[in-house]
Image (cartoon, rainbow, N blue to C red; front, side, top):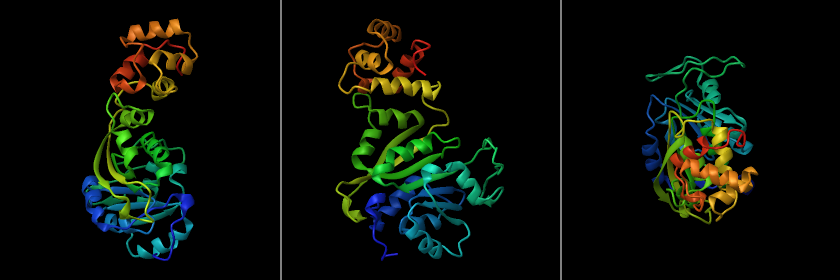
Length: 292
């Protein structure tokens, strides 16, 4: 596939330096008992490494130029499935179920899932995600995976270095992105990957980011209600929290002041200083009819 040039409109930067495969695979801890979903296999460098370890590998590629070469490359390996499509239009758990097959045994792992269109995927699906994500869809893909009806148990993704730092931020430097990811997962940066490791070379370095998906969200409450408050809190950068909440939720300042007092949060603080636990306290103290 060396003759297929990267398509700028798809944000393609193919991993060229194979030295970075080992830390990706080690972080993902892929073994013969694992089902793996790869997003954007590109020219198949990471796919080849995953195929040697995984019990079942589903690789989803949007670029139609790469589908046939990928299928030829992995012909004769029935545990590898090349799927042409947009991951943002797929239910990831169902995609793994459909590709790997109902009840197929993969090592000591067994997938049991109904293929009925009306199934709510109530049976557990155990799969991991490994991906070199295009920068421009990083946030959308992470949200799609973490909010899925059947999310992965973990994800190891290549993302822009600065984005990885934002995702792993602590209170004082939090952002809406950090809260959104940490609500569902525990992130850590495995290591930096220099721009020179990719072809074509991007303008910035990347990071291998590991996400351990929580069995339950970090805050025990309705996600829609939680994020309505969080989005309002971050709606006005560098504003004090009482001003952001009043503007974001269209509440009068007296109501917001009382709300913050009930939650024990200083109204002069800024959204980036709040921890997930504090957001939970704030959301639970929220006027019942105002955040939906």
